[in-house]
Image (tube, rainbow, N blue to C red; front, side, top):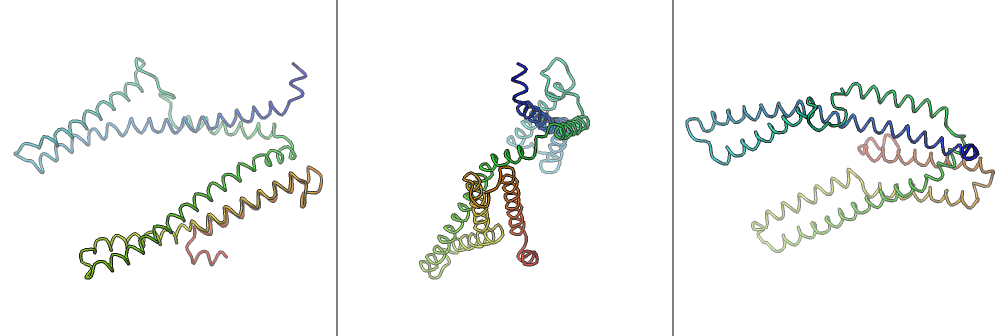
Amino acid sequence: MQNSTTSHPGGNTTDELIQYRRDVTDYRRRIRNRRLQVLGLYVTPVLLILSIFSCVAAKNVFWLGKNMPGAVEFAFFLTFVFLAASTALQFAVEFSKAFWKWEDKGTSVAKLRLDLELAEERRILEARRLTPSAVERQASYKERTPVEVERLRKESRYYRRVHFWMQWMLFFCSAGVTAVTAWYDPPQPGKGVLIALGFTITVITGAAGYFKPRERAFNLQQTADSIEQHVTALDLGIAPYVQGEALNLELFATTVESMRIEQRKREQQLDQPHQGQQEVI
């Protein structure tokens, strides 16, 4: 048993670091859930009171001295019953021991935030103590690269599809404008269709010019192809990865990170207005 532990120290280190990340993620999830619970405890009674006042105000403003329509009364009644039941259930779960107990019952969000900060601090301190060597981290980085390539390709395919459908909608709408104009002369019967088609063309053209799906797809595909080229070169041991393993991994990590930074810069340029892009370039 002792030999097995000493021969696989990296496995224990990995498990410990993974557990610290799980603890941090779990605290973040608990904070989100607790915020929703507290929000429900405060908001539901307020909505219940507002629904009562709304019913009274509607009666006095619209149906003073008359009977309120049955559909309106039924809608107010259902709203009141739902909010009252929700309020009673939440208060019972929160403050009574006889009901089902939800996670972090009675715990403040501030305490959970403090626990999260402490968990993150422990993770950072233990990561410094348990972090493997640079060569091992670079080798792990290389193994994660195919996932990054697949993510880039997936986003590129998404933007290509968006651009494809935008272009086809523009084609059909433009052809529809011409067809409706030629069919109706004068165009009064088809005026509504022409307005709808013109509106659609304007929206699609503006969206395509603002979001630039074609440029985004091209940049993502280009970055994915470049990273994949370097992965293949590293696996085959061809230029520029013709040195020792440690130097090759260091060069690979540096090159790929530079590509990712350049990709983020291109995305930021696409997010800026046209004038801002010219100033950045």
